[in-house]
Image (cartoon, rainbow, N blue to C red):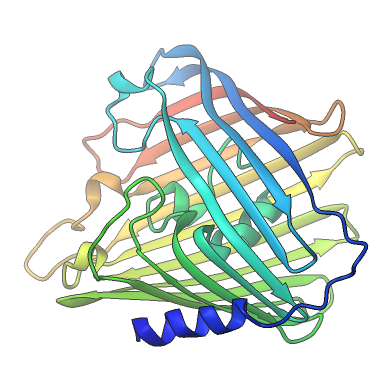
Length: 328
């Protein structure tokens, strides 16, 4: 399997190219900043200014067919304790080469995973909260691997991904790979939907099914829903996770927008147990607020954000946030 994949990539990248002779290679640098101020209003009195994350990178078009991108993510890893959040660590979020020819596109390296991109595009507020799978660690937004994407027509595409499965800040060197296949549909009118399934085998099979759909009304308002089912989480048999996210927006003007989102994460009960196996991480989250775009590439949002755990012995928390995104 591995040998065939390497051979296939070599052949595809070796296909003679017939680019325009007058094409001029070009590139540009880019940067993005996420920051916020938050004040606890329930369950905690925490108040702080926070520089959440920064992206710094460069993209370059060698020809109409070849494109490369490198993107460094400067932030605090998710596995660090709250007391270590003041430290900043730099990771390669992206470092890949893309080949495009007609309806086919291939990306190889540290790539962004397509099962997150559509949801992030429609959610529009990555700067204040990740999308469902990424937020609750049911997948990573980027990974080492290769993706094949084919666009059949204006309404249907399909993609196949082979990846390490550990994400972009935990690079593994073993031979346990994750495989993913998905398809996006842009019909019927005003609907955009996606189905995605991935699996990886390590003594037992761990798999994830993702279903997403979105309805847009004349670019005035939008409502979207996402469902995730993770089977045998962490390769532990019968340990399943269910995720649900519903969000929407209403454009008051070209600069002001109302938005809201509700998430729910739950897990199953194992035979013989009284409580769900992942009770400590089960719960609901609500985000609602107003976004302001003073000029292009600057967003700010005043919003309410809470998390209420399912466990009766754990206290919920609620905050008022002022979030900021700046793109350069």
